Length: 458
Image (cartoon, rainbow, N blue to C red; front, side):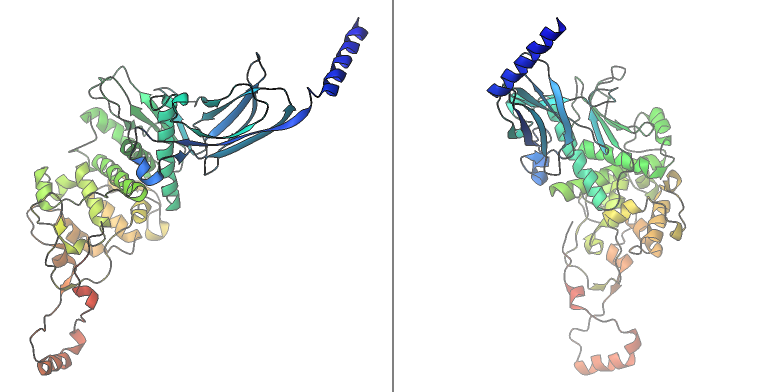
C-alpha cells in the first residue's frame, strides 16, 4: 500500500513538472506607503499632501485559493516609505495582502488605555494574481477605511511624532528612550469634561484622549506631550509633578511650585518651535508688561509660577532682536520700536532652541554633573545654568531680563542692554575732530549697521 501511495505522488509530481503548473518563480511585492493627513491637516503645510510612512514595519502575506494566509516576510519602509519583498514560490495564482505595524525601536503607537503591543493593520489586499506588484498605497483611500479609521489616525500620529523626533535628533538633542503613544484613550473613571491628554512621568506613556465630549488629537497635542516626555528624560525630580497634579487637579495656569509651570511652559514653547521649524508657522509672541498684567502676572515670582509666563520667558531668551522691541506696548505682545533709538549693543544676548535644550544636559566642565533638577526650574536657577553653559548669554544680564518681566518697571531692552550713540549731526567738522582728539580712547564708533532699524525676524 505504501509503495502504491509513493508511486502515485511521484506520478503526480512528474505530471505537474511536465505541465509547468508547479514551476518555481520569484515573486516580488513592493510599494510605497503614504498617508494624507485629514484630521491633523496642518501637517500638509510642511510635509506635503502625501506623506511617506517611514520606518514602519511591513508584513506581506499570500495565500492560494480557499487556503489561509501565510506570512512571506516582514520588512521596514525606508525614509521614502518604500518596501520590497521577494520570495521564490510556484507559479499558481494567489492573493496578497500588505499589513503595517506602527512600531519601531524609536516609536510605538497603539490603541486604548492599556495597549502595550501594536497590532497589524491591513492597508492593501488583492484577489488572485499570477504575478507580484508594485503599488503606491495611501492610507486615506476609501478602500482602507478613509479618514475615520484608527489606523488612519495612527498614521497621522506616526508622521507627526517622527517629524519631531528627527528634528531633535538633527539638533543633537535626541530622545533617550522609545516614544510610546496611546490613542484613543477614554478612562471611564474620569469625567469626560475634565479628562485631558497627559504624559506620565512614571511610565513614560503619552495618552491622547477621545471621549464623548472631546477628541484631543491634533499636531500641537502630540508635540506638546512629546516635549514633556523629552523633558522627563532629561531632568531630575520630575515625578514630583504627579503629586502636584493630584493636589491641584491641574498643571496649567498659576502653580504653587515653579517647576510645574516650567514643565508646562517649556512644552508649549517647544510645541510652537516645532510648528515654526517643521510647518513654517508662528513661534508665538513675547508678552509685553501690559499682556502680563492682563493675566495677573504682575511680579517676576508670579510669572515663573505660570506656564504662560515661562513660555514668554523662553521666547524672550530666544528672540532674535529683543533690543528693537517695546515692552511697554499697549498690546498683549511686544511690538517693534518705531523709531528705534540710536544705540550700540555689544555682543549677542540670546539662545537658540538647541541651546535651550542643551541647558538640560549634564555639563561637568561648567560645574553641572547631572541633568537639570526641579530646584533649578526658577527664573534665577534656569538663567544661571543657561548663562554658564552657553556663551551667548551674560550672567550679569539676569537682572536686566528680570526687569523686562517686572510690571512696575518701564525700562526698555535698549536701555538695559545697549549704550546710546552720541549724536554729532550739525556740529562743525573742526569741533568734531577736536573732540575726537581729546577723547579718542573713549570714543564710540558708529557702525552703519547699528543705525539701521532692526527687522522683526520672529
